Length: 182
Image (cartoon, helix red, strand yellow):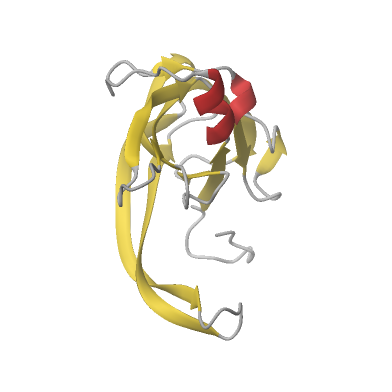
């Protein structure tokens, strides 16, 4: 949610990072993942795509490493979906683990909010209806400028024929780098 006025009561901003994870390729290339969330299977960077709004992106949009513009005090939110929009296979980021270079972030939290969202009805996109939906994301606060390496750890769920609920396929991670500059 960008703040466009130069005369605002706060200089802090929420920067949203959408992560799309290629679950079909992962389940094909890494079919025997860890079942332990404390020891996820590592992945190379060609299975994930991170995007932020152009006003917050310096370089890396659409790749596994993203360089963003942010100020100290800004909040970064990571949202993740499969290439199916979590309809068929699904993902959820369960941990962001900071491990190298500068300390850029602090205070990671996982949040779930229930609120009214739009829902197309009667087999057409418009007009929309409304329904109560859950929205979730991980977030952390920017505490300094710099470059930080971290692990994005996520659970991958798949659908099995004859089973109503998605089934855990395994736990994975990749190690992106984020650069924060104002």
